[in-house]
Length: 379
Image 1 (cartoon, one colour):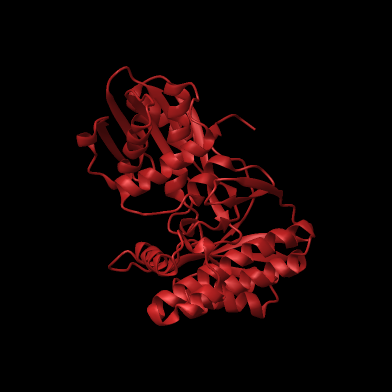
Image 2: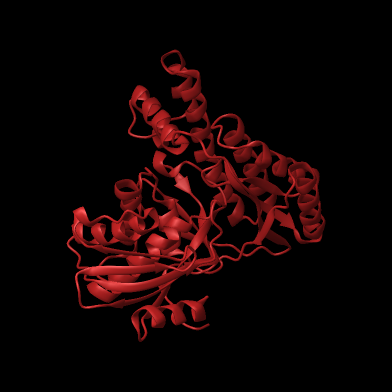
């Protein structure tokens, strides 16, 4: 990837730029809790966006996407927003830095990625984090702290891409640390690293390779449900709610909104249970909580789909310690915690049974927990 990016940069712009990378992420547990002020437990992975970037002495940005084979050029004022959807992520990062009193001048860039698209691994956050980190170094002497870079990416999604997302994806992409997961308090912004060494176990993503497109934005609708319930309960977010409070106001809440809130409240507690279990080396409890999350996302939050429920059942039948849908939902991956001696059997069974049922094989991505956004240096 590096060689191809460098060659394309030279072809388009002449000379050489500076390489930056930012990773995708997986989330062990804590799904759809970030925008509810709760806890999440992500880690950065070894799949990334890589960009070669160089200031060009103008007030215009020229960017080439290797994966799409497309070019985009735009100015740096609000009215200069590019028509290409993918380029709006980069434009948004530029604008959000400028809004915060930072400096962005014109630059040339070529980028590519190996974060699987549609798998729930946050390729968009990796793109935002890569460019935010690069522009912070190239134009701003790294004056923005890393959490602010994450917020720049989040604001890009809100203001330029139409997704009212929480902070988790950008946070994990920016703050990732090899062999560590991070428990992030999405309300306070405080976080803590937890060593994540899986002696005798492996973590693997099974990508269904399906993405069910829905007419409206199910992500934003779930968030609206949670906000309505929080308002009814008289709390800022569902972080401050419990099941007793929810039950007490049940007659004022629609059945659908009640189910959404029930899932979020239960998930908040599961994240903390997993943290305690990891500190004790109790992976059986971690696995039990993962299955609980899948059940909640499928039945209460209703963001799963037939294919992901099938993969979860296969994992359970194969004796996998923990398995759940990962990401926004309606397709993408399951994340699976598997004993090493069951790993080959599980992968073979999942691939064969899924292909038999749905006519195509799922993709398998072993998870390696890696470092966050950075200037690229040869390992």
